[in-house]
Image (cartoon, rainbow, N blue to C red; front, side):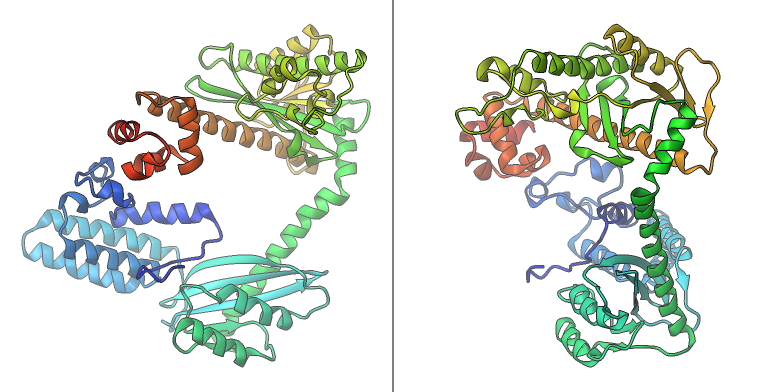
Length: 527
């Protein structure tokens, strides 16, 4: 935080929750989120027309009205929704009395939105204070903290944090270390903190937090009544979260062998599939298609072996052809790696001492083709480990069509011995080639959970890479219209500003530090 006169809210442990909060707020209170450079242009943008901004840049709302709007946002963020609801109700009635029904309707809509949010918050009967309930549990050498946030008598938030290095310490000792770390420097310190355990230094912690808050902070351990039940609820939340994480870790660490054996038996494989590869295709209306390859070894993700393939030969939304291209390129790399080994192309140290490190996959090429292109310039390059290995089980995210395309590629390349199955989303059924009857794993089977986890990871990775490619495409199209802005200058701008939005919001002076002033002027006009 900076001492710049601004109000800070947070910290948010989830970026997604932060974005959701801001989106919700802007539908209720349309405040601006643009940078000062855009604001100074003095004309409204799309946000105003879709009612996500009140248009202060063009004077669509006066300074006093906009300041009051921000005060209401502040009230909302502080968790004082009943106070805000009373104020909005009064404004609505005043506007209706003045026969300004359009304004009254806006206040009414904001009031309804506030009420909907409030209905989802638990209410503590008879208590209207602001306080946090903090509990820590320690079990089997692991610790977890839970914080319940109460504002105006309502439980408005809950978050958990893993506590590391607990060793043989008690919950009280962990709590005395957690409280100063969690609240130190926080922009929002409640007047009262309810602790689950009585640490010896609670008074010293209270003094420290009082200094941070600039006012008294009471740290105490409630013994009975509703406040004690609130602390116990925080403890239950921490314990449940800790045990859930342990279940996931135990599942990964201890049950993997049995799951792989069970999967091999159900799919009639020769042995447990140590290496599983799963493929998926992602596109938007047939554009920016990307094929994803994720790898699980011994039942665990191997992110270093993940690869993505920008589809080059397929026009439109043809998942079958896209899947065929993805697998053809992946296994062509495998065959090339085998040929290099057979020819004795052992990697040697390059003149710069990198020892073949240039053969890492090019993030823009997707399938590592940039490294292959380097071979002609640099000489021999070592086969890439991810492509050199063959999977014990190949999963295709899709039904019989995608499976048929995959099987055709494997036969074409002489790899028909690789077990391949398709996983249909509708009924979570596995299909094998040339067999119309699906393999149905029990709904509650941990083996099905493993297969779904592999499939979901392939889907997530495909969407992530597709969005990145789509963003790069949009970036290229927006910057390509600027005369005098070639590839070198584009990369320099991206290194300096990070995103095309930041480039568009930068001043001419800032842009001129990277590109000539005449080009900077064109960027401001066109981007």
